[in-house]
Structure formats: structure tokens, C-alpha cells
Amino acid sequence: MHIPLVTLIVSAYDPAIEFFCDVLGCELVEDSPSTTNDGRPKRWVVVRPPGAETGLLLAKVDGDQQEQAVGNQTAGRVGFFLRVDQFDETYARLLAAGVKTYGEPRMEPYGMVVVFEDLEGNKWDLLGSDKPNAADQ
Image (cartoon, rainbow, N blue to C red; front, side, top):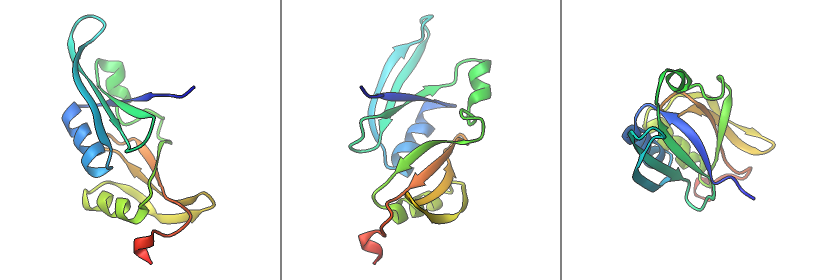
């Protein structure tokens, strides 16, 4: 068993694709035309970290209830976790892109961590290994 997709509600498809692919380094797995349950056009957009099994279904907001959830899908808590091999490189890319972070990266028993917000305001943990990047030594 595995979870192939997790839905993330976004305001618009293209800025979300740009954020997850260009800033975070995910791959665009699929961007296909689709329709809502009541026949309106939409897109089926999936991004995934390279080599990962689980991806994000970027779902454009549809209606007032979803509009209220944009950027607050986990009630203000860190609800998403991205583990990377090159923590310092990824963190520098986030800063260069103007991504909001909370505090400085810190070492925890499970590795390096810093909290950041995605383009909608959802909180994520950026996680790295407990060993420094080889390039940083």
C-alpha cells in the first residue's frame, strides 16, 4: 500500500507549478485537461519530488469553502514535509526566491530543519540529513 497523491488547493495552476518545480525542485509529472464532477473544465496537475512515489495534486480552488482553505489546509500547523539531499542548496534557493521562512535552520535529532511557507502560505518543514552536505565541507 502507498499514498500516490495528496491534494494541495492553490489559487492558480501556473504560479503553483512554477513554485513547486522552479523553487522546490519538483518535477511536473502531469498537466492534463480534465473536468469537474459537474462538467466544468479544469486541469489535472501533479508535481513530485524526483524519485518520490507520492506527489502533490495541485487543485485550483473551486468555491467559497475551498477559497477559505487556501494557505491554511492544516490550520496553521506545519503540515507538509520535504526531505532533501542538499539542504543548504535548497535553503539558499528558497531565500533567493523570497520564500518566507521562520527562524534559522537548526539541527534536530532527525536532521537539519527550517519551516517555510509555500506560495499560498501553507507551512512546510524543509528537512535535511543529520550530516553536512559534502559540498559544504
